[in-house]
Length: 178
Image 1 (cartoon, rainbow, N blue to C red):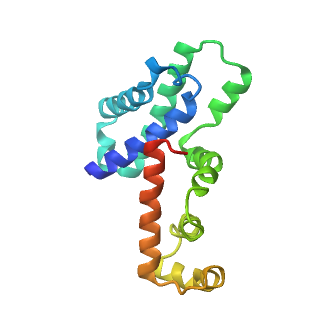
Image 2: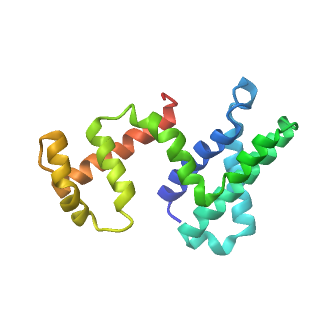
């Protein structure tokens, strides 16, 4: 695993954990607890799954599951009376739907802080990049981009907008300026 992968995944895990325990970490003495949960998750991953360190996809899946379980244990420790609604909500949070969970609830908020063309490119990238090469994506979306923004879209432009959007999203998440 590269250092970049570890850092980026740690940030995503922190954001994920904060969503699960957000009502509990508003107290000043618990503000660093999400970071502790992420650190504990990494430690458990390294101890229990040393064979998975070389496969980033497997590592990501396992770490989301571990982080979810750690966050839920934290909730039980500091807020033992959990309603059936909260249990049902927690049961729905898995790695498979964690991306959808984050996107549905938070991307709309994040998108309000981005330029329209950034939102357009980011949504298209999320939708198409697992299925097509970037060059093909640009060919597919260029007419719609030209119609919306009265500009031509090139592969270089697409990559620049996508990269800058990713940086901006990370800034928004890290600074909690949402």
